[in-house]
Length: 253
Ligand code: SAM
Image 1 (tube, rainbow, N blue to C red):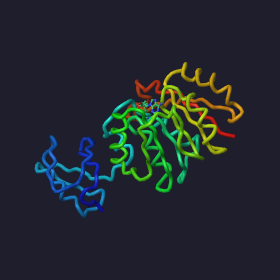
Image 2: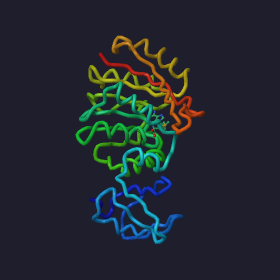
Image 3: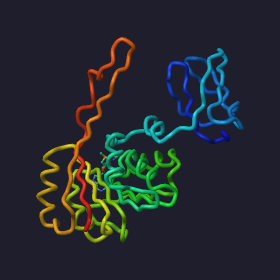
Image 4: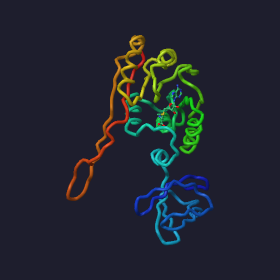
């Protein structure tokens, strides 16, 4: 049931989406004005009509809706990359994950969703302005209780002990290796997302000193090719997101 203060995703007949907070107030769209208070007490999936008679469906927003609509600071990790990070590292309900940098908080939200209500994500963000953006976005996603955000530089050290995984999206993940070997539990993963090949190369040079602490590393890149499905023609779309980043996985011994 929708309660006052809940966020709902309104979808109009064109598929346009609006993320709104339900309160006794009017919400203006180009298809007319909605009285949001009418949704209070109704189940998700209910329809609401604008003063012009246009219908909107009220859905419960999922994490992708939140990430699509939230304010952005730095470039976010794409869902295709977040998905493989969670799957390959086996990030599970109840896990404790160290993350840096939080940035806009998109990957933080994916990780918080994966660890569930009994898990924990501790995320370091060195920039105060991005820390503030991430904090708001994590609140918007409803994950404040399972996420601890720290306005700190992870290159100075990790304050936590015995964590399940470390997930990094920052320029020099090799700077975190000396701390990772101390705090990562055996069997846990060190994951580094880096946009550039030379970052991967530099990381592997630094890794030589720590190779005895980890199983054989794995580096992947994820390509998702979407398809166009029309009655007369089914084929791959002509454009695609060609590159986001390289993802390096190390498993602690
Ligand atoms: N993964 C994030 C998301 O999905 O929204 C985006 C991360 S953004 C590309 C990289 C972030 O790392 C920036 O916000 C930057 O300020 C932060 N950062 C860079 N070096 C850092 C460090 N040593 N400690 C903590 N944060 C750091």
